[in-house]
Length: 273
Ligand code: PAF
Image (tube, rainbow, N blue to C red; front, side, top):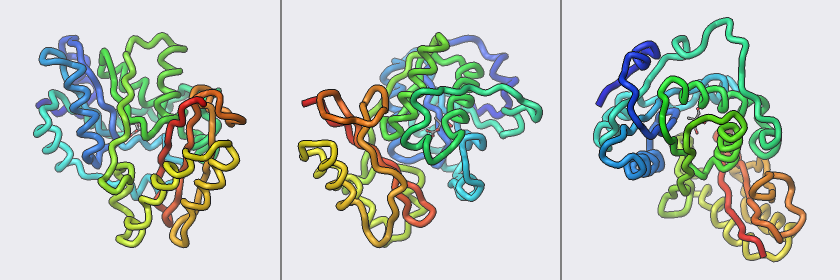
């Protein structure tokens, strides 16, 4: 397994087909599923590449950036065990020019859900993902569906800018109790961790309801607990991410929930009826 930190080294490598899994490290089973998916898409010939970079420009809160778990040694060990071919681990200084003045802005899907409460977040995501695509030149890249909005925005960016990378979405990987796997789960107290599966249970129960209003009210009631605070809870059209007014099109029930400063997200696709 090659570990490369210097972007300049990448341009000296022979051009080879490869599937990229972009990550911010603190790798867990959810990432390994993405890596295995990348291997099955790549086949034995193409490279499986993982980037590990905590991207400062997608964080809106300095405390969240500072608290983001960093476990590079373990991450590299696990990548090796998963048969990854190349890991890209740049420093922020090597990725961003101090006087940079260009960024990617997606302006239709980015303002709702996570974008509404995290201004600039998706500009930061799009900008780093495009930079990673340009540096690593993958043929395909795998993203988790837990970050549904991120996946939709990256698909839109790739379509709009004719970026020659196939985007592969992979279904959310969950703990046995239903909690979506996330690097942030490690920051929950035992009490919060025991409470957090209510998010998934609430969404499944709410999906049984027959109108957008009752879906939202059922979900809200079942998510709320003395330990958490809902950042947003919305039912949106699964394609446009605009508020769903009926259930005739596939819709997405999406939420972000704070347990103190730990922000967890989850979503559920509700088929058209
Ligand atoms: O989903 C993530 O971990 C990040 O948003 C990504 C795609 C690696 C960009 O920094």
